[in-house]
Image 1 (cartoon, helix red, strand yellow):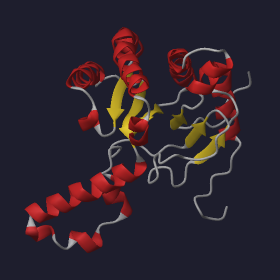
Image 2: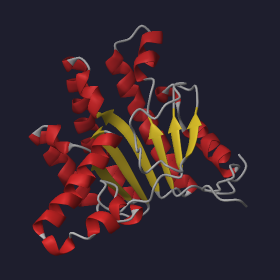
Image 3: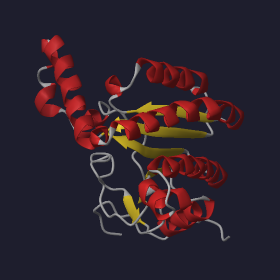
Image 4: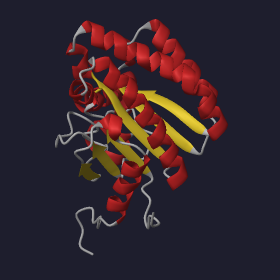
Length: 240
């Protein structure tokens, strides 16, 4: 395959189509989620091979809590098992693992496992793999505003910051405060919307919508997306 002329620093993927993949094969929805884990593994390997530094995955939105309880439990169980299974791979390949989102809604056991995996991989620097779990863009902006307001309320001498704070400073209060905004956001399965994902951070991301269902999105599809990105002309509202 031809070389990728311009590799994005941060690639983010809205993983969509697990249920449809399973339905087309007469399987339970859980089978699609299980197969989707293989796509996560393939895209993580491809990201390392291509030199991507950050790969983020939209795994579970705050709205997804409204799904049937058995499916939610299956997804959380799969997340738990996948972290335990992949930890050795993260350590061997220099992958830092991060989970971002409203973790107050997760079980104590899952949160404990997440903390342990994040701590053990925190010094890895080949690739940062970010999983957005129980996340929504509106929640993220709201929690950032609350955090900032709480800090100012606790220190009245900072009251002037309420009117003077800029977008860069405010962005540090988002859950992605120390992570660069995504250069490329990919959504699989043919849907063409962001679904309340990275609304602030994705302001100038390149968007790529593809028909491939997530369980079928593997290394070739990932590299093809990067090739498409490398041919885009990013102007950030300016004239070149």
